[in-house]
Length: 501
RNA sequence: GGUCCGUUCGUCUAGGGGUUAGGACACGUCCCUUUCACGGAUGAAACACGGGUUCGAUUCCCGUACGGACUACCA
Image (cartoon, rainbow, N blue to C red; front, side):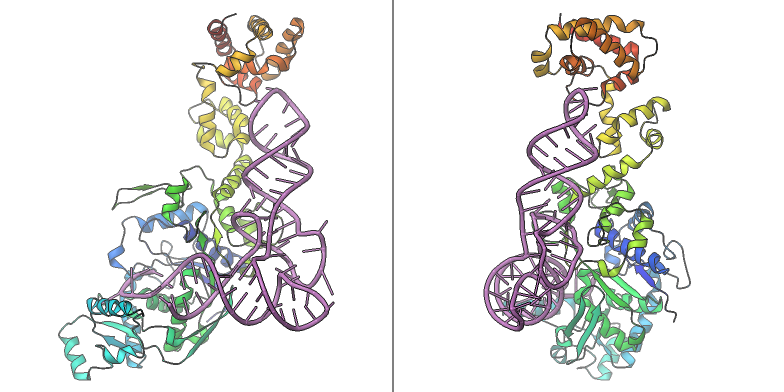
């Protein structure tokens, strides 16, 4: 086995990929690139009851969108194919049999109903039921049943599961790359099901077998897996793979923005922000969940934002391209505690990255129905004022549509004699202006106002209201330039006649 | 309940035995400006608590509290 870094992202295709999953994928990717290792993608679809149409594609598209490229795995292939666990089904039974043969695992015939009943009984007595070294001696399994009975059940096709025979007294200690030493006693681990009665492996078995077979060097996953890490280590031991066991790094959780607990879909609905990278149309419920991409977040912003949720470079640099993240990334700088999901920060990053985009690019992408030269001017006018690209289009509406009414408060206080005189003078002088550009318009305006003895500041806001209907907005001169002389004239005409002189 | 993990401004975090505890988001004020925004400046804002160890703990150790994850034939 080489000492090359090989990491994997192993999502389950049960719906839209959660943004926390994207962060996990990102950290794996950054680590792989940083170390010159490989990034694998494995699809963990061992739960046939939770299969969701389109989910795998969604994962692929989401990773592709944020710029995480896969070296080996589902969608690109590789030496350890297949990378979809459902297609590796025979492998798991083969390995489970090895454990059976070596006495590290056993058949169990207890039904789910029986076990549920046990759990309830225990719970009503204030304790928790565990299928473990003690209770297994009183349950229906190949440890308590005679070889003949087991054989009879098996050949009769009776449903069974295969469970790990967890040692009664063994200390399990491992050094998590983020949390240092973690020690758990095997008595706290129960005899987890390895093979389900439908012939599919559970996550635990499939995960360990595949990580071993695929020569994974580092398992970087969410903290929710920390409690089952001891079990996985026991499994590596049972297989005799302890020497090549991957190193573990358990990432801090992404928490709700307010209150406590893990970030969930509910928070998205409550807070009015996305919690999925891409929009997701659930084929079962028919619900549509919003996505960062569709909401107008730039992928660079999402990556930068996500990278900083649980990790930081230790410098005061905030803006990082993917290449810079790769350069700066290290597992050691990942924090231990959970990070609250603060959408404000994401918005700020988006604003920063939006400003970095070229006017031309944005114009082509978002104002494709407007003549390019004009579209570029519009983008330039709004780019630094908005958070999302689509806001440019929304904000620009006033350039295309003359105001229906005028801000009452401003009209009543600013539509005075000076304003009337100045605006009318400007309107009268306008037709003679040939070169209708911002600078010339401004010259004309200040010349006219000077002639009339009016200070520009006195009437600017009223002029803005006359032309746009509202008291605030981007540079008025540039706005007029974009509207064009005819339109400006028409609007001034309308304002004067509507408001009266 | 049990097991495990965690705890520095409201939020993301830097730091680490002696610091004016640093930065960013958000917030306040001021400046710039034709308004709004951008930008600039500036302000308010934190070491959960209790014991040790130490000349000295926010930093190390132990408790407590609080929070979280897990506790399925789901991943």
